[in-house]
Length: 496
Image (tube, rainbow, N blue to C red; front, top):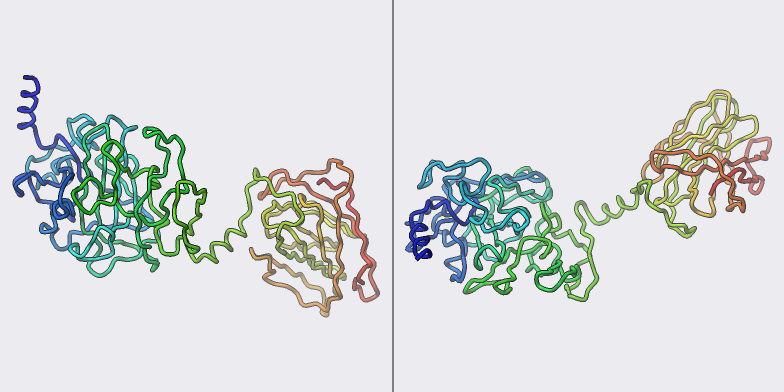
């Protein structure tokens, strides 16, 4: 008897009490009501066990939006959608059959979360936006859609943001075709799919890199409800992925059982937000076939050419809490620092070898009759002009066992002037002063046996970098040129 009464009441309840859809005038079937089809085929009606013609675009391909009604997707920014159980709960309530029933940010006004198939925020399973770079919806096939944005906390609020990847290319003339996809929690309803197509257009695009061919997503995340507590990242599909087509009579790409539906979550490697690895150059070295036993986890190229990405990565300095490798065989790069003086002396150009991955601090070279000072610098220190004195600044790494410094002394061919040189990220001076230089001398500083504590100079690139004070004795000819082998060095009071 109670069941019969509940069913009778359900027949007279407002249509707002159940299911959900995205709403916008660009939607196919935007004005479809429960009377348009022989069955309730409103955009909010769930799709399950249907023929392809029935479930594809919700059967609304013959109910397109009006010309000019297009949902804009700004690159690199969020696109705010409205998701609700009824059009009357949205901005476009004036064209709904029930009038204005809005209730703030609620997707289903005056209804419990069960109306949109969840028991609470911890039970939402995410939804997705996908795009096909075709302007005619009737030419779009399931394999043409690529998921470009996911919101893990969907459906939960009426206003729901979807982050658009910054590298999305422009749509063809006439715009693109998009789709909203959702599968809810298994403990909050039946095996129901939700799909709604709409006209869309990418705005603000500055990229011409096309999307890669989308692939079927694989179940690879932690799945404790089904006896798999640990993720298997080697079994994931990386890059462009198709939406889920599940539990229909035909054209499925998902074949999970009733109580293990696919979700737009990490369970299928759908990260929250923009899907930034969906482009043809996202994995330039290709991807091996996924496997449950594979441990391969690729790193995507998220912008620019692969060579530019690698060069940028090699020039990146670590933060101060990173541990540098303690190996003298670490690949090295070269950096130059120049110094000029206003006295009638020589100008020194010093080059030091160091590892680009290591924190860098500067040390002073003490030269007879010259004044010195300890300074700290970042990757590219600049030269300083000092009146009536002579000093040089060298960048050295204090974590390797051996530091090699090449010193070249030359005599200016013109009256002494100040020379300032800066070092670019590649380690090449941007300016220099012409000299007639002699052959360089190389100084090798071996790691001292003592471990006496010296001064510690914090720098912006590495906190607590150790500084080695180096005393050099220069033996020069009457032409002020350094002869090979005529320079000796000793590390005094050095901390390693």
